[in-house]
Length: 253
Ligand code: ADP
Ligand code: MG
Image (cartoon, rainbow, N blue to C red; front, side, top):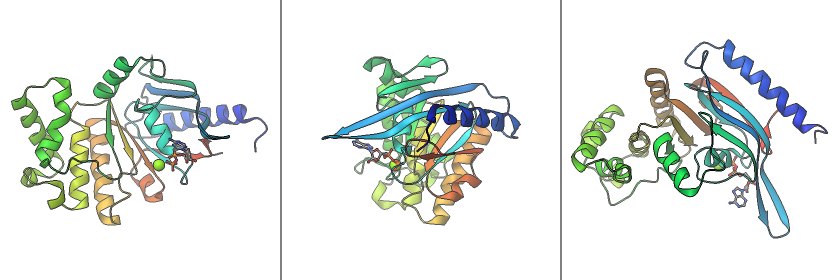
């Protein structure tokens, strides 16, 4: 146990900022897009408190492709859910583009999720009764996009992820890699500022997983999308512009 955790966290945060500035690639000179300070998320389980996040501070620039690494239980998913506005911190600050999202009311948080965030999950989370096209078009219903435009945009995005010839297939008729491509297309429908991916290759064989990472890298490089990917697979760092490592809910030293 570190006797001065706050000091250690501040130092590593400062180091990482320097590192970012020194790197080549889309992160260069980027303005801070996400500022996380002393983030805490505690879960009370009976008489025990699990500190899923325990004083995490990190700054993420616009245009980064960040790999969030760490062993199972280190707080990676918890961090992603907080950044995506799917959960609220126990303590600490999350500023995105200058807005403190931890104190937004439910409506404002829903708007934040819809406008700024695209989510990709390990198990795809597609609707099994809908075709690829319907799955991708579906989130646009909540943004009030007219049906014709929904289908047009969904079909463009499916072409973009290499599924032009599979639009009318249902998820069960497609491979895992193809299903995850649908999920990637769906994450992009509202043109999000930030794409959050929680173990996106966890259910895929290594070659298919590599293809999905390659697709994410393309979205980062060619479209400048800020992408945060959680993984415990070290190969993910080959694709990312930077990696951070979590341990027990903080940055590992
Ligand atoms: P990771 O994604 O790195 O595997 P998580 O963020 O899912 O880790 O979890 C971090 C810790 O918080 C774990 O000990 C986990 O059991 C605990 N945790 C996560 N979500 C909850 C929850 N809803 N209720 C209780 N404990 C939770
Ligand atoms: Mg997880």
